Length: 356
Image 1 (cartoon, helix red, strand yellow):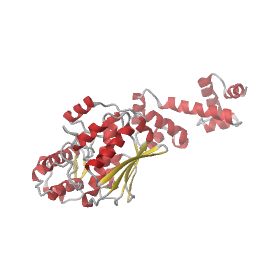
Image 2 (image 1 turned 180 degrees about the vertical axis):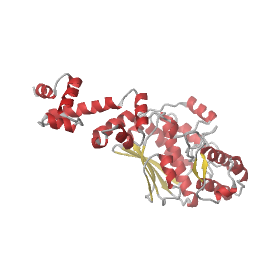
Image 3 (image 1 turned 60 degrees about the horizontal axis):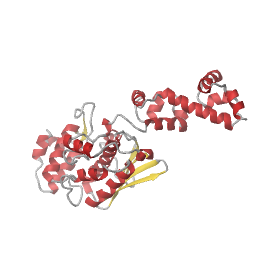
Image 4 (image 1 turned 90 degrees about the vertical axis):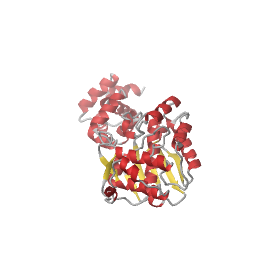
């Protein structure tokens, strides 16, 4: 997952994979460490001390299936960024000196909403590294963050593209103090041997061999106002707060996403398990996060059913029995009882009164 922002946000972009206990799960592929070692070679420096500080033995590098913990990845990447004075870890044609990503974070912190903050980040990133171009687009209700490559990133390509997108996603979550659920990720290289780690890094379906690197998410997140200010940024930088999506339990759009799923895909939302799977979470997490937002799944289901029932009663002449089925009730009797509880009227009475 994302690297810690230490003192000047130098580590926001290193993709480590955290377990239940931070740093305990050895899930980060050794390929990312090999990329860091390659950066040392690029600058003609010895990575031995950095490897030693992270307790990464030389034989680990020779085993492509080896995994290390998030804590080990954080240590070696932090050491490398300082020793190489390059927060880009050799990805680009010129160094990103210590503090570069902190500068980008500071330039975005005053934005009125997430859309403006991400647009600033994308634009300013091009000023410090023109090897790639970051772009934020919206099409309908979907937003995309896309990377266009202007130079050949060679063997560091995967590490670079994954890290930059993880960085930007993590920053976005921190800025609005919310999980931002991803709808999809894609990358322009073949599926690597460690492709299983992508489900942890991005928690969404991932496509390989695409035209470009991209993340997709609900465009409504872009409307959220920033929850951070300069004071919060200073504290984050000083205390090395991990910029990782998984620390954000709250999803400020969850109620809207649940409501949208109930309306748009009723055939997949009859049970909490089915709905949770559709939203890429467990049913327990779904219930907990809705409670944190002051909502409940049953209340949202009732709201959607009521609105659907009222719409059908007003717009169609379908019999009550069919309306019960269309709104997800097992029988006509339970539908009538529920509708009377919502409106104080039976479906027939509601339709008759609305006709006048």
